[in-house]
Image (tube, rainbow, N blue to C red):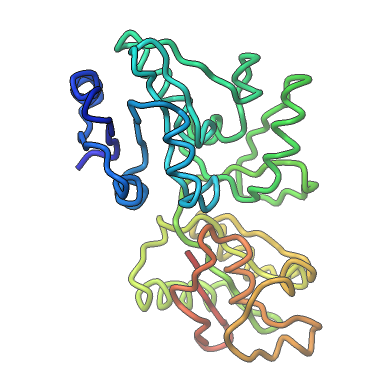
Length: 290
């Protein structure tokens, strides 16, 4: 199944068919509800019609730039292709791809307009996800003025960064929140993770990051265990943890926290959805969010 659809008014059907063949995309005729369907089913949308129509129709459907599909408009005269949504999230790439169909891309995102890459573009090129998405605002702004360095850090290791540094990790759908008793052993953590992955029916290769409270920085057993599974262990401060919603009672209130496993998993997750509420495995507590 393709992830791309071309939508057009009946008058521009011939041009739409040409684009659909070029992109190996699905082809749909415009209707008042077609964009509702397209937002659910596709990651890339090409609209052959006026920009004004597209803007009015998609405005009520917008959620956030990380989840919305990339939308480009092709001018009815088949001269220009204009990214109107998700420029850094696939629309610019789609517009440039359509140069092969004879169209001229009109790129308006600031970084690409001055021929610089964005954080999102670099992440996609390296098959990475952006862990701290809010950082992209300041990093992309800095890229407008100068080259921003990119550092490769090989693990095992730990990196402490400021909020305006974007962290790119290998792609993954899940964040695993971990709480543990003091003096936890490496083998206890690994055993708990194996049981949790089995219970949640996910594979460790689908994990973006592991997260816990910064109060556990000295737990060598936890650090070694996550290194053993080739994972990325992120320590979160109290403010971030306590800003998250929690669904289960927790002894962490004795540490000044509303919880550990659940809020740590939610804090770094993309969709803020618990797929496995916290479970206790011996002296380890694990929650998994998507």
